[in-house]
Image 1: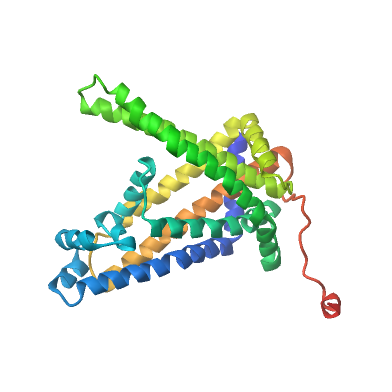
Image 2: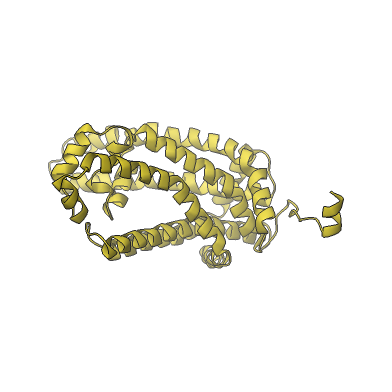
Length: 334
């Protein structure tokens, strides 16, 4: 079964590379949400800096004194600007917020919800393209996106319920109450850190299992043209249980790609500060990292689709008929 996961992973990589337009498309989708917020943040920073001496030091490096001054008077989007959002620190900041279940400003939550909603829409078209393993063109992509949008919205409600339970119940149970009991009589900091790291690992495994089940629910919904998202989730659980080794192998390989992308970015990301060419180089490296992250996300979907089809269907099979643009005589008649 581990070999099945490896073969599905290779097939998934091939499917992603055969449709580079999807990678470019989701990158543009990300910019669509990020650029307006970046422009708003730029306006806030420019208004606060003005023509002061702090403007020069802020451009050439990290001015912690000025950042503290800005944070003291910031509100809304401005509260997110801090040293940890620059360079590789942004990745660690996001990871820490995820693991510790920290609250985010309303503006960030709103932008995240919009981003998730856009992903819910394009998910149908993306997975449908990978499932058919051939070009579906614009009409096929957007038809699939429209057909599965409301189905995946219903699935998102189930996801929200599950993740709410995981983060509001399991997270404090493990990392607050259970952790406090385990370290009650421990006075060695290294041991306490190891225990907390182990609990983080347990929590991460639970989240990964939930992500995997919901991913396969999307795959089954598209390949089998399912309308009931509850049945899609139930069948996804059964599929993962029957193919646990292959699914775990596949997840591990894809997660390894994610770690490789993060590690490469950590190595090549330039130091903070600088203007002119160095600033643009840092921006380009950041965009390459963003593309790599999105490519890995699509690799998850493509390889999971490949694994499902290899076990229960066949490559390129989708139950729903592919829409065709009418021939010229038919188009004229319309």
